Amino acid sequence: MVAPPQRLLIDTDPGQDDAFALLLALASPEELDVLGITCVAGNVPVEKTSRNALQICELAGKREIPVFAGCDRPLAQELATAEEVHGSSGLDGATLPGPTLCLQEGHAVDFLIATLRAEPAGSITLVTLGPLTNVATALQRAPDIGPRLQRVVMMGGAFFEAGNSSPVAEFNIWVDPEAARIVCESGIPLVMAPLDVTHRALTPPFWKEALATLPAPLGPTLRGWVEFYERYDRAKYGWDGGPMHDPCTIAYLLQPQLFSGRSVPVRVETEGEFTRGMTVADWWRMSGERDNALFLTEVDREGFFRLLYERLTRLR
Ligand code: RIB
Ligand code: CA
Image (cartoon, rainbow, N blue to C red; front, side, top):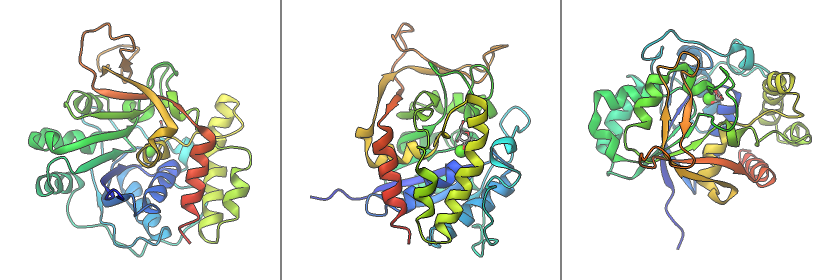
């Protein structure tokens, strides 16, 4: 008996690694039914993340996926972006023609609320690949949608691994800690792919050559994105590859056995003078709080890249 595809909403701030996550999901229609993509300000402003999402759908040949623009700034602070990592476009490293697809009318937050109210309760998984501003805004405006979500699978956070945007904070949380705290305290079951696991999903030495074997424009585009994207972390950490952060969420949905972690209470620090944006994972359950997240810490790197490559070959 083949299980029906998991029904997904994906909130994202493309970003080259977001692009790989979106392509992985869009290449797996038998297992993942992407109901819509909502875009948020993060790596670059929302005008660019939205445009990038359209280009990625076009590159995947999936023109029917509705794409919405969302929040243009965090809940309680100015937007901080990451052009130093992703380039001014957010997808530097390759040049794609301007999208012929158009954004849907309406705001991403309204789409999230309407979809979760219209679809059967518990039938949708929300994947988040960027700051949680859209999701938190939707939960504030429509608290009834929280219990209607099956779960949230997010790339975000860090605990045993140092932060990448402050000594203790990972970018998606650091950009909007208030939003992350709202989602973490929402009661929605969470699966977190923090830096603790994504820093183990480093592109292997042969990865760029493997991508170049894919037919154009996909192969040259992906190779160019990886070449550009990984240079920042290679220089910063001295690694021989770059971390494929966001695809870890989709790979978890497709093959959870590639990952391991622990269900623990996770809270977001919003007041700390030095720790704002930190995800505090109560690994030994000392707080007495309830477990709210499966906090992933290990990945089968070889299996992960085997899955990612095999699915990308389907996007011919
Ligand atoms: O810290 C890594 C995360 O921040 C990834 O989602 C990357 O795309 C950026 O958004
Ligand atoms: Ca992202």
